[in-house]
Image (cartoon, rainbow over all chains, first blue to last red; front, top):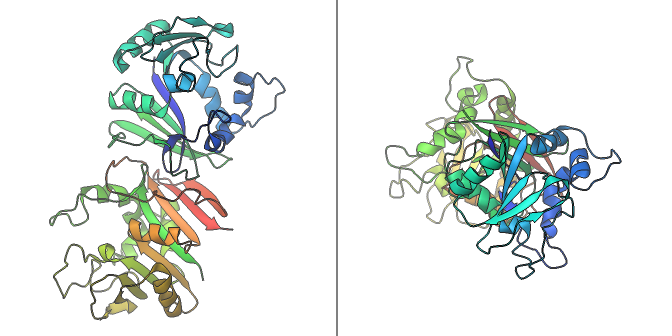
Length: 214
Length: 214
């Protein structure tokens, strides 16, 4: 029952881009940041419902598989669900289509209450205003003994890291410099303390760094 | 005749620590940041004049060897020479003992003029106030066809990067979070543009990332 987080960040530590527009809701930089991840076979199958078998199958795909494996519940911020972009749309059902890739209970942190949504494939979205520890307790109850993933965005992951609630943090570092956005690495001095850090470079050039609690 | 820079940085991008005291002139964090580098056989031989043959000989040592190879002149900031710590000591001759590891002409950027110093082993220290392009021209004249290294600190390297004057940047990333100091990655958006980026992980866990101009 591990609490995990996985983020794509740039070499200068930006996990969230801030150049979003209505035409490019994820921002122009986002594509460059997650290119290797969305090119994996696992992402294509799981998120895009692409059953062609295409996509990369190397180190990046191994992490993509691990991303979805053994997760029993997910926690995300309002921004990751898209509420910041569609604050007045009561019918907004998230970015991920009718059959989202999570397939587990998802808890969305927001101050604006909404009714719970049930999606195809087993994903539910439940909205609540709570501290990291409170929502984690809810998610762990829902996870049925499996892992809980803190999905993002960067600010939410940082809040959970600062509260000492994450057992395993994996960052996929794209070797580009964005120079703007939301930095994951703020106020996290000595995160490595009490953790084992391992790194490997994928065929794509992505640097995968994992912090595991000892 | 490549213009090169090599820096040790933390995972959160801090290249210079700022916890220096008179008792710990490099700061307590500095030791953790450069531990793998100072453990190499090349550093021990070249900087510490340790001829015992001890020290690591893996990937980190390969970079340490490259650090000193084919360099014909060096440029550094006043802080790297130690002038910020000893501003009133007219006899200050730098951090590196009587026989510094550079063995080439070193140009120290400072607004306070000082006479040129000649050290044992071929190192000279010359002090000047100049723009990056100006001092680079001086160093290239002195380098006799060899490479020029921009030694540091982080602010000086960043100035040369922003001026487009560095052909090859190597950062040795220690997977620790310092959370304070001077960040290399500021105002360097899209540094990777027109450059090839390669990464590898050393036995020590250090992540070596190199940007080479195409």
